[in-house]
Image (cartoon, rainbow, N blue to C red; front, side):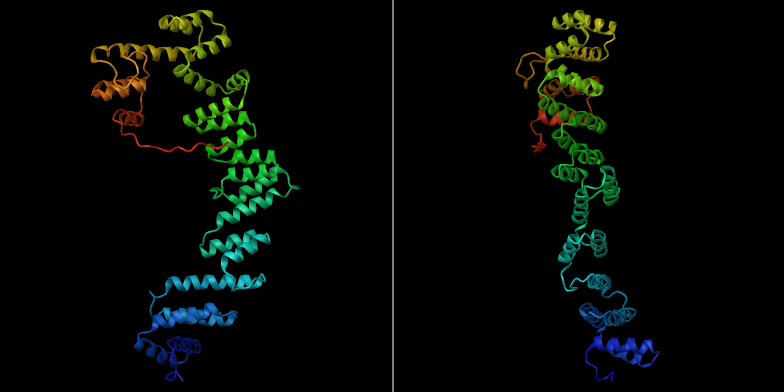
Amino acid sequence: MILNTLLSRDLLIDAYKFYSREDARAHDALSIIMKRGEMAEAVTGCLDQGSQEEEPQKQQLYMNAACFGKKFAPDIAIEQYQSTCRRLRVMNILRNEKIDPSTDIETAIEILISWKKFQLALWMVEYLRIEGESHIREKWCEFLLEQYQMRDEQVVDRIQKILGPHPVVPYADIANKSIEKNRIQLAIKLIEKESHALKQIPLLLSLKQYDLVLAQALSSCDSNLIYMSIFKLKESIPSEIPFLELLKKHHLASEYYRNYLFATDMPKLIMISHRDNSDDELLYCLLDNRQESALSVAKKIRRDAIPEQIEVSMRLNKFQQSLSSIGSPPKAQQPNWVGLSISQTIINLIAIGQSSKAKDAQKKFDISDKKYRVLEQIACDILPKLSIPDIAI
């Protein structure tokens, strides 16, 4: 019978059957396959035939035969053997779920999602090592958002378990879906779970959760995000008084805004400081540009924010006055160094080849190496062109 068998696949099946019965004819069948040099073809043939069978007993026969043949050629069809085993297991599960096992896997997963069998769909993509995990988890979370009989805390707890410690779906995306379903308080709770503050801010602004905007921005320790949040809040709050009162509730945010005004709008900073404390003497000193007197007054009345700003300004003025002998700054719209910002001063020093003085300014005013390299690029007109997307609110 063996000698009359033409296909190596069938010979391998016969060899496995003989081996199972402890029949010596298993050796004869294997010898013919090995002489032909067709063991790889025999194993592959069993895998292909097994993947087409619907009856579990026949599937098992072909897979066992393939495994038996692999013992004599361990390196062949390793990945195909594993993938076929996984495919057959999934096919049998689909058959139990009353889904046609010949259905392609993507369609089968969508069917399971529509039947709300998210756990099984998730197991399937993880078991088969295919894409689709984020899609299933997102649909699962959306389903929970529609369970209006559940309390917000219960929904958030369930979503946390679904997304796990390393979410493949951002909490901000789920929060946005919650807003669309008019579950605002639930959306706020979900936003608070978002680890990326940059994704939190737009949603919180859209919900007018201004206190949370500043709290989340400050907790990020990202100065760019903090300034961005302050400017967005200034746009969102029409009146200046409520805006300033909000900043006062978050002391660090108020200090960031004052630093910004010190560099861009000193008269406004003076007005705000005067309105907050009614320090007429300090106000007049600043308006007259009597910095030393203003510093003395600020220290006397224990104003913590202004003395540091004045001291930096005084040191910068003194440093800039020492540069009068090296010519005018080439990249400034004024002939004098005094009045330029620290960054503008360094850029112009580099532009005229005064790198040692630029380095001196870097040390005096605590400019980081990273920022200094950017200033060098600006001075040499080699700054890369960056495209920074705006955040849609």
